[in-house]
Image (tube, rainbow, N blue to C red; front, side, top):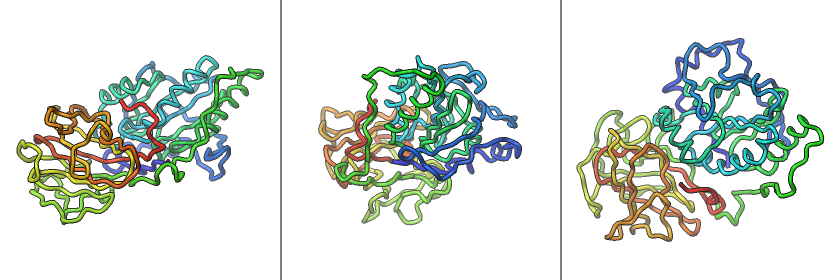
Length: 389
């Protein structure tokens, strides 16, 4: 599944740095031909870290001192563009880690390049926490001003580039999937660098997958941006829903369509999402809420809290509280049987894990003001096999 989050926050946050791109700066040009499944064949010199021509900072290294392509000459390098709230990126981490463990001793290196989408992802401490939470063992460079992103002419999260031992970009793979052929490409470039190299028979290749196949349940609801984010219309279905900076007392719409949401109670418009600004409350029929309609197996949401104060968020699906059979790993159940999430960090939360693909209505009921909801993403029945922590 390809996650195309084009242009993202560039217009909002990166105007100054975008103009800093030197006309003389070499950038990757992406041809249309593909090889080995969805991979694109390239043969271009890899840009360095950071690319020349910039006077603005915004580069921070995690798990490593700063590296250059000259230092990495002789290695086969995978550049992985990711963002810590992106479910499509998160689903690639187990395979990335497996490749690193298998092939690092043969001269294979992964450099994770983190480029922010939502405002919360510009915080380097949030990225550090994510690197630790996901157990990423390889170097990660925080690219807050899109210096490396722009030098690779990148447009996607996730996106993986494969660089040979001579420093040439040879392959590009945008989005999830095609791991079978990408691992073949890793081996091919390692053997080019070390003729005669062989690998253990136990290093089996990932299966060829099609996560849109009928047995997966179907194509999920597309990603839902809650706020008027970076040119997106937003998914709030109330009449005239967005009033930047203002707190509005909303009335829940009579009908909510798939991939859309409705609000009741007092909410404030933020460029990234909507913030609950009503009074503290207990869940009930009259409680303020965000109601959302989707079809998928699993639902996820990017959320955060203003002022750093945790906020309890009660969750109901199809008019009832979640149970052990259909709740996401971040959901807890109180002694009264009410399902909730303690939103205490700026990240993506796992809301539901239904046993089967289907259509549902979610009610999100904040217990106190300060909760911000930025987006929803989804997975089908073939997109569940990854660590949910």
